[in-house]
Image (cartoon, rainbow, N blue to C red; front, side, top):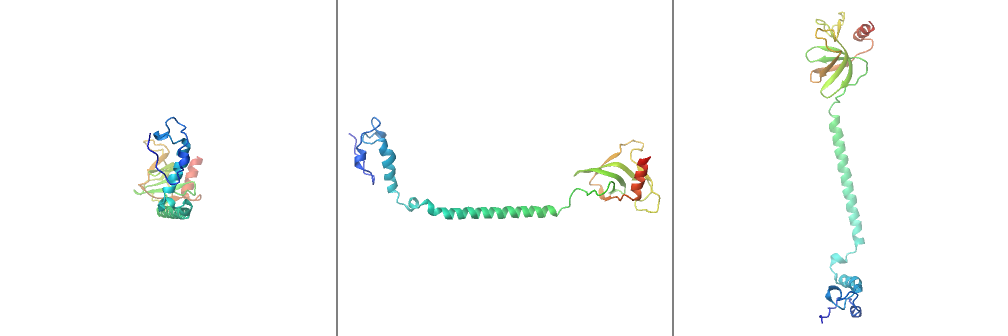
Length: 194
């Protein structure tokens, strides 16, 4: 015969003596049944939990937990707003890569003194794509307003290039939009009407 079980707090002796549902019983004791394991043992174990950690009700800790969540959420929002503002300020300090095209034709001034006139159709980070290209004839300054303008159409040269140019952005000093009534635009339109 097995030794009797010790008393576990609110453990009732009349429940222990009930016949076992499973052969020899659970855990090898004949005097235990399934009812005892699922209903009596948990009550006995719960009564022995007297430490402050186990006796604290979960409802009492919820307000501080919610305050902590709100604080973390608030800090996260402040940090993300600061990062977004910093990025916006940083990006605004640098000029835009693109050129605002307010007219049909532009003048592209290069660092070697050459000026090309035409339509900018593409702007990339490495180059600028110019079509319908004209340039000033050698010996005529771009700033000489009194002289007759002698424009040369790109493509009429001996090596026969196409009427397009890819100009490296490293070589460009500046770009100007040309007015419709400028002498260069009038000369381009007159050449195209032939």
